[in-house]
Image (cartoon, rainbow, N blue to C red; front, side):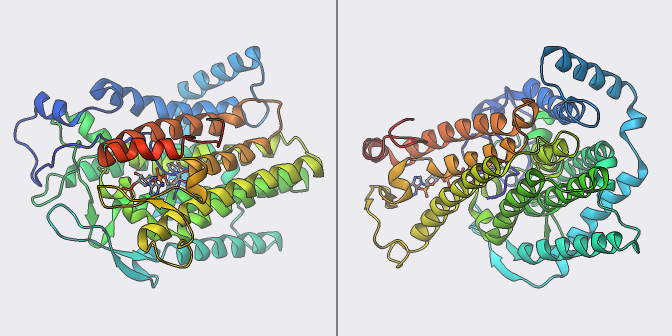
Length: 455
Ligand code: NDP
């Protein structure tokens, strides 16, 4: 599953109609339940999260990296003076690169071959079609970058991936502008007649609806904006940004460190995994339930590429030059995390598709009154959210490549722990509603949430 997820989604709510309500209603807002503290919270998050992107940039980068209280205060001053000079955060060249990149990804989405598959049944009984060519688009994108950068190394090309490092903050600003544009377009499209709205996305509080996402599946022709943004420009862009950081380290220091190779490889594996298992996204809550608004547009197009590439960017100037044993331990942690993450997710996918298939036939399960079976052995017998644990272990491995001189590169592990704990609590709540007593019985059989015998 791609990492372009927000910490929360609108609470499940009564079925909504396909048309927007005439009367904005506090009543409607109340019925659906607000996430993020309602409209004031939405405004806070809309301005707060871009600030975090800039804060991370100024906290650790060329010249300085916050490692104690005085240097953290200095980072805040850098942020303040950076924001006081917005022209320095923007360039038309970076904007052209970001918009061009998204255009190329959209073209690949439309033109590359791929199986046409149907999404889940919508509440009007219809199913949307999606073209599954993300895995191919991933390799074509990387192939293009590799060709461009190897030509650069031979001194015969105009494309230097290290440019991404030099213009990182301008690229982030351009992505932020794009996110706002996409969210605004999506919001406007939701007023077209026949547009299906997301439950919880049409409370009538405009700022909240704009933020949380009003339309369920906005499309430009056959291009599904939500599925496209979730998996393509930001996610593949993250991998390419990382390559740019490695190119900058090579240019500046004459070599690429073990940490830089490791973090590139780890995150490339993560992005590849999301695109290789692209079809899995169609059954996620993001696609089936959540609206497409600022939160997802910003998360997919700005937050993922520009906060998830933090470690590689930090390594350009602050590489701890870890020894082979430390690197080997980090690689082991990442691979262990990946094994648990992929193993658990694949086991559940296979079980949900066909519980009698050879892959999962040996596993034990318990029946439920709801009709769906719950696994109680294999990965799912270890802990109820062991897939989250594997995911977090990988995130921790990424952070560890930066050593221990600053806490800033650990932002991801901290943020992701909060996200996953919140998500686990939310899923537990929904499962107890779905399964009733059976869920309580299941929890007795598998008492651990994240780590067997511990938590
Ligand atoms: P899960 O894959 O854990 O799915 C939860 C659902 O699985 C439950 O609602 C239930 O649905 C079913 N389920 C729960 N327990 C069992 C069981 N024992 N046997 C069979 N089915 C069970 O959650 P997510 O979709 O949140 O996460 C998927 C992956 O995505 C995770 O690995 C997570 O780490 C990752 N992720 C990554 C993010 C990122 O930003 N990098 C963000 C969020 C998630 P039902 O019974 O109805 O089938």
